[in-house]
View 1: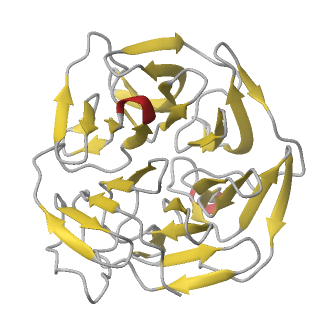
View 2: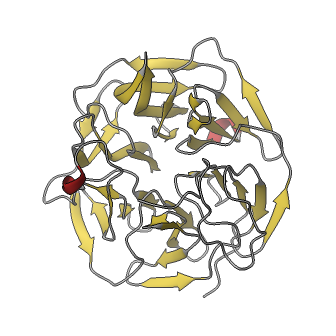
Length: 336
């Protein structure tokens, strides 16, 4: 089944490591850090050149609707966690130096908040002196500067690898892992002052790095895969790739039993407004990164042609209101 015409822009980077399998139609990539830029429509892809952020993975990306641009923050670079703020206007990257800035971090959650008319960012693995640990701070970007809305939140508490989506007039924050390697599967919303939990049990298995997307057809949160607890390896491990799918509607979780993609961690999801399906792209299917694409139409999975760019995991993805998507960064390192 053909993917609808999405104007998709991929700006790709990754940490060093051995390359995973790439789509046969992709241009060959040397192992290691990726810094290329691809422009595509979901089926055809074009290599584009653009100076911009250094290669990184676990950066955070969101579409800033009032400013008609994409906002990128942080990520893991060759020099460690980043505190850089960048914007992409559809043609070029711009490095900004705002008066205020969150601390360097990776694996934060970020999405546009229609209530605030600002981009909201929560937590992530934050650099604090010599170590990095999950934080619980909330920040907002107004197009010119960052402002800290809450310094600490005991609920949802510190977490990295959580995911945030714009959901009608609100934002929803899902999952993540805390500093004790406890994986969460809860959902929270921000009212401008306080985070409030909106789901109830039974919940999915706790996870971080899940592929999440808002489904406007039935006003539900879609969650696929991610990384769950891997107890046999002890604390600090990368987690166990999961292969289950769930939807949250009116606070209640439903597991989707249809056979679909393999277990995938640190993948991404977009919404195809033409076919009205959730598309799952990229990720790590142990032990290799993938360029796979799958579609969920509300009843069944469809395997789509591989994305014609090299495989990767840990990429930052964001989408505008008409379906244009930006994907930045990631890693082509193999191993779990």
